[in-house]
Image 1 (cartoon, helix red, strand yellow):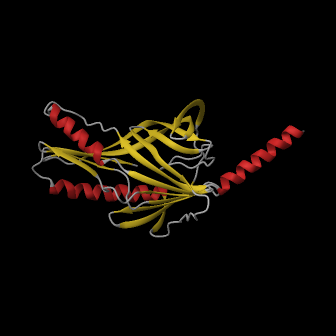
Image 2 (spheres, one colour):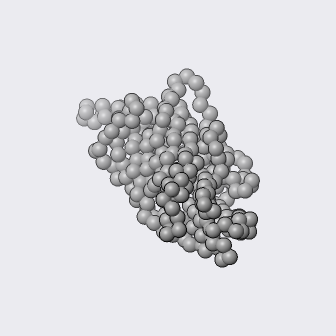
Image 3 (cartoon, rainbow, N blue to C red):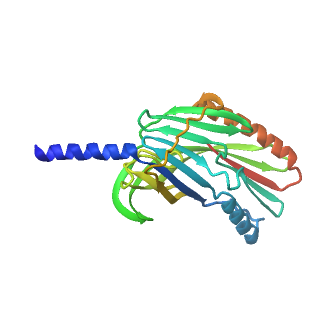
Amino acid sequence: MKTVLQLIVLLFICNLQAQNLKGTATYMSQTHIEIKKDSTMKDEMYEQLTAMLAKQMQKEYILTFNGAEMNYKEAQSLDSGPATASSGGMSIVMLSGNPNSLRYRNLETKKELDQKDIQGKLFLVHKDLEELPWTLTKETKNIGQYVCFKATRTYEHESMEYNFEEGKEAEEKLTKKTIHVEAWYTPQIPLGHGPSGHYGLPGLILEVTRGRTKLMCTKVTLSANKEILIKKPKKGKKVSQEKYKEISEKKTKEMMKRMQSGRKGEKGYSISISN
């Protein structure tokens, strides 16, 4: 009976500590780029395009947390906008991220608000948080001063691809893939927060790999006395996640047509949009 009581007290103390934890975590993204290479593309061009896109897709993000609440946004100091590269008359554009986005998440109420910008128009996307099916393992590694444990999950993901060739109508293709996610979290910061759409582990996620993109925490700052303000985004038209996806796809198609008409004479290019 005494042991059970001690365990209950310990869990209560840990919960109080988690509620009082606040600070920031900085993440850097790296994306492995794969370009479909045809017989007309020289090795030098292929390597150049791959290197240019990989560099442009490197982004920095800031996660600010205070107990169960958090904000997540792209650092404004780095280049924003679509990653583009061109060589030998061929152009590639990859649309990913949203530099004007501000994400708010509350793990207690299980609610999320995500402020997004589509061609200068703000939307406020709201959704209920679902429980992510993580598989916890005993595998560990150190990230900075923190001991981290590995967790994994898989899910089905849809993305839209547009291919353009001179003199032809744009080809639109919806692809479905099984995505594997590998995350490393630290129980030393017992909060279920994480970058982007990753959350729900028994500790702050310091590294996560989703498909070809890796987010790595480069700095954690815990605040004992400094006040940490978590903002709920308020600007933009409030829509559901499903409605936002519908609007985003419509606007993307319109932009594709404008880009196609403005790039006449080029050999071709492809555009990928993740939903």
